[in-house]
Every structure is written in C-alpha cells, then in structure tokens.
Image (cartoon, rainbow, N blue to C red; front, top):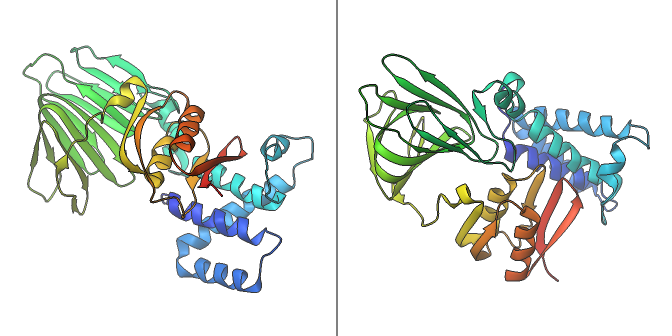
Length: 315
C-alpha cells in the first residue's frame, strides 16, 4: 500500500500500542485492539508499519539514539514510550509516501520553508509570497501565464502589478485566480482552505461552478464539495509575524495548530479538548506558547519526550 496515511489513524494506532504496552493491560484491551485492526485495511497496514518501527527501536543497542527518546519518559513504560516514538516517526516518514513526503517536497520545490520557519519570496513580477511553516511551492512563469503550484503547507500571496498574463494558484483539486488581491492558500489533507484579505479570488475545479470569494471571507474546498463560506477571523494571517491569535479556540484546535510549528507530536487528553482559550501566542517559541496555555487554563503540559508533548487535565 502506498496511499496517503491518515494522521488520525496513526494517532489511534499509537494509542493502542501505548495501551498494550502498559502494565495494567487487560485481555479486553487486546480484543478491542484486534477489532480496531480488523475494522479497516488501512488500520492494519498502519499497525504493521508502527510495530515494525517499534521493534526497530527495541533492537537498538542501549547506547544508541534511543536513549534520547527515553530521556524524558515520565511515568510511561519503555514500550509505551516507544509506541509513541513510532507515531512520531511514522507521521513524518510515511505521511505522504515516497517522493511525496515532506522532506522530498521541500528538497525539490522551487521555494520551501522548514518546520517552524516562515520565508518571504518576491517573484520576478513583484508578487510577494510568505511561506508558512513546512511549506513548498513551485513557480512556473512563461510568456502567457504565471502559475504557482502549492505542494504542501500554506502560503500568503500578495499579487504584483497587473499585467496581461493571468496569475493562477494550483492547489489540491482546484485552481485559484486572484483579481488584484492578498490572500492565503492552505492544503489541509485532501481539502484546500482559501482566505481573502484584499480584493477577490475565484476558485475553479472540474465539474463545479466557479466560486468567487470577496475580501474578509474564507472557504474550504474539496473534490466532493465546498464547506460554507464564512467570515475570515481577525488576525488570520498573524502567523506571518510569528503569532497565533486564538479567539475561543478549543485546546484540540490549539494543539493541532501548534503542532505545525514544531517537530514531533502535540496532542491533548479528551478531558481538556473542548476547553476554550483566547489570547496571543508565540509561534517562534512553541514551548513558551504551551506554558502560556497552562497559565490560562486548568491544564498542565507534559513533555514525555522532546518529540511528544501532551496537554492534560490539571489535578
């Protein structure tokens, strides 16, 4: 199987690995895990990949790099922790498969940014690009067209001087044509999110009528349809300046957003996932952002390893 790996399935598999590696595991746990594996062929495939990674960790000599992963293990057993190490590795190594992995996409793209990095690029026609964390774009200008291909991540675009050649952004299942504008495009799995800050943009995809978004509006497009158009939140592009503006954001949403800016896994316990936070948080120092969250809400932040951080209920 070489299909895209669903990050949610990877996370579920990691939780099962950690549970089965705990000291109080029961036969009911084993049976429930077996049912989960049988429920979908993709579940079983991810399970096999992760157990292989876990076994590879266990086979390393004690002085090898495995010690770095174990250094901040907290109260977890070694096998539980290695299960979560497999989550981190599988999320990065198999997220897109083969040459479509993040590493290869960044390596071969015309312009790219690393995890936690933003990058400004000014094109020959004066168009200004700001690449958000872990993003990659290709530029294809010729005598008749100006095409931009978003390979991964997110880009904020301010189009240059108007000219005869149309400017188009290819992302996901569609093509975006700006009409003298400033807008953002983000790939979100199989969907594409578009937010318009100035001017207008037109979204086109095969088999559907074009959709025009004015300034102050946003929408998420997928091959099977469009989510309802909504108001673009204030501060939606503050990531350009290294800030996350949270307006009654859930902890689940906060952890998912922050995870984009650091290596490894950031998640939260179900008990705190629906708590909401409002504030301004630094994206250039995610540890500081997590500490600020812990001051704002009745939660604690536990670093099980340098690559796995969990937001938990404060007891």
